[in-house]
Length: 192
Image (tube, rainbow, N blue to C red; front, side):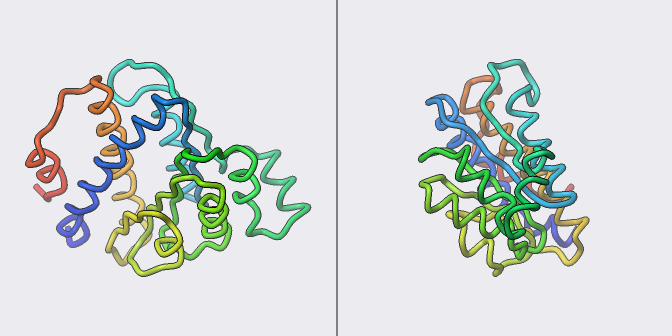
């Protein structure tokens, strides 16, 4: 409840990201996503929502989860330093103007922070979902959605909420879901 009570700014940011992502994807851009552990599963969840559908049917969009390419992951870790795990994939798949979403509950994972740096160097828009700020990932990203919670599980729970709000914002921007007022979006972040 404490973390949810401070989540309203995160709701507004995730909704805005959804609208911006809609414009990127409609113009032929793509989304890349990555994280470690539970954050890897959430990165994969996000890309599935974009290639598939969130609530209602719409066209599929290009979304690649860098955490799920097992052959690539093992090849990179075998031949390069661990911080290159996602960075090399960002360099390979990312194009200027694409969106890179990185998830890290601590915001300190070296492989995720390096991916953010490499993404910015390549001209990608880098969004970070992290735990409490300040942290290295939030500092490197273009924008960060930082959940102020003590426990990793709570950060992950609110990251999932934020990802669903991002998807709803994208679908609203595409006209798949009805428009919401600013008050509706703000109310979504308030605890019941």
